[in-house]
Image (cartoon, rainbow, N blue to C red; front, side, top):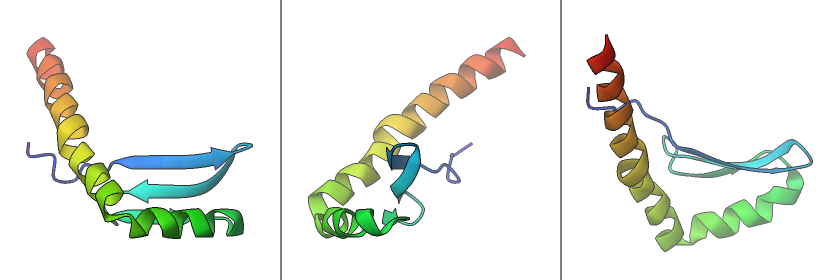
Length: 76
C-alpha cells in the first residue's frame, strides 16, 4: 500500500469546541469559529509552517503506518 489516502489532521480546540484544523488533504488550516479565523489565516500565510506540516505526513504518518501495517500483517 502507498498510503496515498492517508489524512493528517491537527486540531485546535478550546473548551471541547473545535476551533481550527489543519487537514493534509486540503493543505491548510480551516476555521470553525469566528475566534479562530485570524489565527488560521496567520498560520496559512506562514509558508514554512505549512510546508513543515506537509512534510510531517511523510515523516511521521506514512512512516508509522508502514510499521504498524507490517506488524499487523505479520500476525495474520
